[in-house]
Length: 527
Image (cartoon, rainbow, N blue to C red; front, side):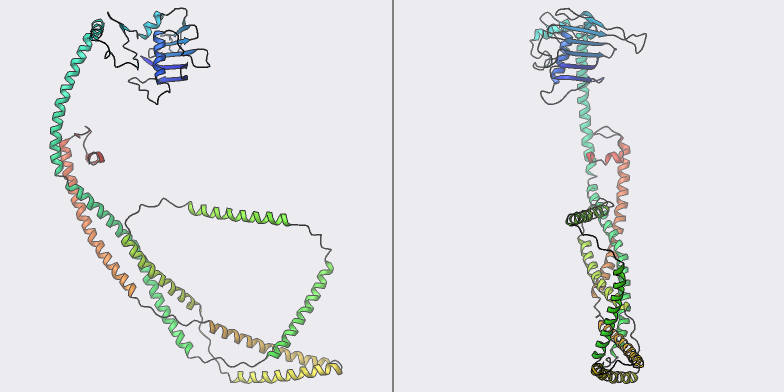
C-alpha cells in the first residue's frame, strides 16, 4: 500500500508531498490546480509510458517517489531522452538503517521486474484486452461500463478472485434485504413514536409560558432594584419638607425686621482719605522702585520668538489632543459588552416617572442647600446712639470742609502749620477712617440681606403618591407572577419526570441510535 507520494517538477507540481491515510484519501479542489497530475504521476511511475511533455517548464528532469507501508521507496526520474528507477530498501535486521539504493537504467520501454514486484499494480491480461483495474482515466466512464459484455466476462474469467467477487455480490444482496427489513421496522417504530409525541405537543405551549414567566421574573428583579432608589427619594422629600419648614420660620423672622437707617453723605471725607492713601502708596512705590532699579543691570537684547511661540502652541495643542485621547481610552477600557436587550415598555414608563420625580427633587435639593448655607440674621440694637454718632460725623465733615477751605486760603499767605496742629489733624483723620470702616461694614450687611432669596413655594406631592401606589401595584403583580412561576415550575418538573420514564423505557434514540437521555432528547434536532 502506498503511504506517501513525492512529486517534483512534474507538470504543474514544483514540489508536492502527499501523505495518504490508511483508509480512503480524497483530493478535492478547483480546476487546473494539479489534481489529475497526481494520478498521471503514479501512472508514469507504474507503466513508464512513452515520453511526453511532463517535465515542468524551466526544469531539467521530473521526479515521482512512492513510499510504501512496507518501508521501500521507489523513485522514477524522467529526463528529456531517458528514464531511470531507484529502489531504497530498509534492512530488517537493523531498524533505522537502509541498504544501498538499487539503480535501474537503459531498460527500454519495459518496467524493471523488481519495481513491478513491489508495486503489484499491473493491468489484468484477458483474451480480449489488457484492463487496468488500479488506475482509472478521468476521461472514461466507470470501470467496464463502456466495454462490451465479452470484455467483462473475459475479465471475470481471467481474474483469480472471480469467486470472491461473486460472494461479495451475494453478501451485498443479503445486506440490502436486511437493510430493507430494518427500514420497514424502523418506519413502523417511527410511526408509533410520532403518535406518542403527539401527546407531548403541549410541551411547546409550556415552554412559551416558561419563557414568559422568566421575562416577567426579570422585570420583577429590575423593579425590585428600583425600590431602594424610591426609598431614597422619599427620604430626600422628608428632609426637604423639614428644610422648607425651617426656611418658613426664617422668613417669618426676617419679615418682622425694619429697614436699615438712612446714611449721611460723607463723599468729601472719602475724597480726602482716598487722596491721602493714593499719595502714601505712590511715595512708597517710588521709594521701593528707586531702590530696586539701582541694583538692576542693563536688560538683555531681545530676539525674535515668533518661531518658538508657534512651536510652543503646536506642542500645547498636541498635548491637549493626547490628554483627550488618553482620557477617552481610560473611560472606554473598563466598559463591558452591552447586555441583551429586552422589552422595556413598562420599565421606560416607570423610569420617566422616576426622572420627573428626581428632577423635582434635584430642584428642591438645590434650594435646600442654598438655604442651609444662610446664617441667622443678627439681633438689631438700639440705634439712638448711632444716630447721634452719625450727626456728629456730619458736623465733623462740615468742620473738615471748612478747615480744608481755610487751609487752602492760608496755604497761600501763611507759613506752614506747627507740629501740634499736624498731630491734631492726624487724630481727626484717624477717627474719620474708623467711622468710614463702620459704614463699609454696614453696607456689606445690607448687601448680604439683599441677596437673600424668598422661601420656595411648596409643590403638590400627587405624582409621588401616584408613583407609590404604582409601586404597590407592581409588588402585588410581582407576588402573583411569582405564584404563577412556582406553579409552572412544578408542572414542568412533573412533565420532565414523565418524559424521563418514557426515555428510560425507550433506551436508544430511534433517529440517530445514540443513548437516549433527557439532554439528548431536548436537543434542537429532536425538537
